[in-house]
Image (tube, rainbow, N blue to C red; front, side, top):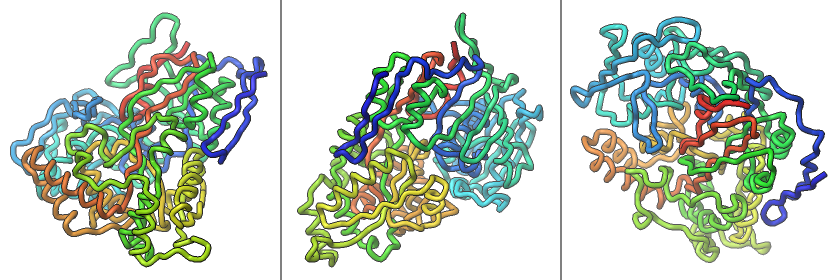
Length: 520
C-alpha cells in the first residue's frame, strides 16, 4: 500500500487517500467504452438553452455549429462551407450538402433558420437570445442557403454561430428538446440521469467521419459522463481505473500527486477560460464601488495561484484571453495589487469603519460544492478578514448554486467563463443593461449608460481597429467600477488512464479530443 497525503494551502484541507492498491484496479472494461468524470449534470443539452460548461462541452459533441474556432479563435468553415457579407446588414451562409441529423433527416437551411428564430421569437426563453438581438429576419431561398438580415451591424454574429455556443437543431424542436437531443455531431445522445450520468454513443454516419485508430487501438464507441462532484472520489476512480478521463476536474494539489502514478498521464496546456468574481451591485453594501475595490485590494491573487493552482495559472486583467486582439493592455487598466492598507482606506471612505472587534462589514459568497471552489472560498475568507471583512461561505450543489446566481440571489460568487469570453461580445453579454437574466448573463445587475453606448458603437464598428478602441474603453471603465474581478486563467489539465490515447488539449478546454482519441 502506498499512502499519498494531499494537503491544501494553509492547512484548510488535509486528506489522506489510500491509493495504489494492486488489487483495486477495475475489471477490464468494454474496450470501446470510456468513462469520463464531470463535476455536475449539464443544465440543458440543447445548446440554444444550455449555458453552463457541461452543457456546452457535451452538447458540442452532439451538435454541429455553422463555423468552428481554431486555436487562435479564428472562425473556420464547418456546416457553412462559405459565407459572404454583401452589405453590413446581410450575411449569406452556404451550407454543406449531404449532412444528416442522427435520426436520418437531412440538415437544411430551414433547420438553421428555425434554430436561430426559436431563440428570439419567444419559442424559447433563453439567455442566449440576446446574442441574436440584431437579427431582423431570416430567409431560406433554397435548401442550402441561409440569408440573415440584421437591424444593425453585428460583427459578433459569426462567433455566436460557432462551436460550443451554437448547435443546429431540427426544425420544430421545442423547449423540452434538451431532454432527448438530436443533432448532427460525432456522438448521439443515449440517456441522462440527473446527478448520475450522461451516455453518448458514436454516430457512425457522421458526415465528417472518424479518424481510424492505429494498429491495436479501438475506436471509442460509447462515452459515459459520470457525475462525481467530489474531487477526492474522482481521483480514486481514476487511480482504480473505474474512470478513464477527467478534464479540469481534479484539483491542482491532486494533479501534483497523480503525476507520480505510472498508470495515469496528465495533458497540460494553456486555457482561454477565465475565473472571475462577480458582485451583486444592486446590493445595499456592494453598490458602492469603493467596497468592491476594497475587496480587490484584500485579495492576494498571486499567492492563491501559487498555493492552490501550484503556479499552473496566469493572472487575469480582463475577461478576454491573453493575446486577444481586443484585450486592453495592463497599463490601460486600474490595478489592485494586494494592499490591506488601501482596502482599509477605501472602506473608511465608504462609511465602514472598524468596530471594536475589527470587523467593518459582513459579506456572503455563494459557491458550488466543487472542492477547488470551496477551498478558494476558504482562502478568500482568510484574506478578507485582514481588511476587516467577514466573509460567510454558503455552498450548495451546482444546480441550486447556479439557480441562485441566475436569479440574483447572491452578494458574491466565483465562476469561470468558458468559450464565451473568446469574443469581445462577452462584455455585452455580461455587463450591458439589456443583458439582465434571462436575456443575458449580467447577473450582478450592473448598469452604466456609457458602457452601453460603447458596446453599441463597438458592435457597429466597420473595422477591427475601431472596435478595439471602444472595447478598450469598456475595459477601462470596468476596471474602475469593478462589477466583477477577473482572477486568473487556469491551465487545461486532462488526466487519463494509459488505455486512452490520442488526447490533445485545446485552448477552449472542450471535449473535442473525444472525436479522435482511441483506447487500447
